[in-house]
Length: 182
Image (tube, rainbow, N blue to C red):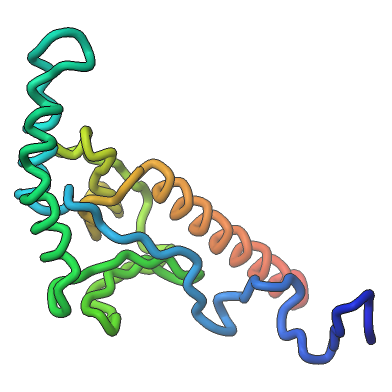
């Protein structure tokens, strides 16, 4: 069957919505974020120095001078985080949240989307100026996973909660359908 200029074969489609794969069929990465320099103590030190408000007005501050002065340290921390055995990234799939390590990403730690109750944003000293924070995943009040130095953590928190909600909603509907069939 052809529609317009793009050929579409309905028999090759394995799922009803293009790009959406049920978690029962395969694991698909939805989003990947890289930690900022705010994930390290040196990066947070840069953030604390740059956040100093002492000065004349909002523009001429000691913090802005320190931000410029610490550019070499910021670049060194950034380069360090890209080293082959050090680099990390955080991935959200349709099944779990994963910390991947190395240039050729290997799963280091993970939790399933159904293995946490809440996601909290913890902004450590020095991360606020960097617009970063730690995402803390909790189950029954206990921390089960921490993603350090996430850029704009509220956005990734919302994406993780939306993915969890979708997984649990679909699972509930499928269980209801199975129960109704028997």
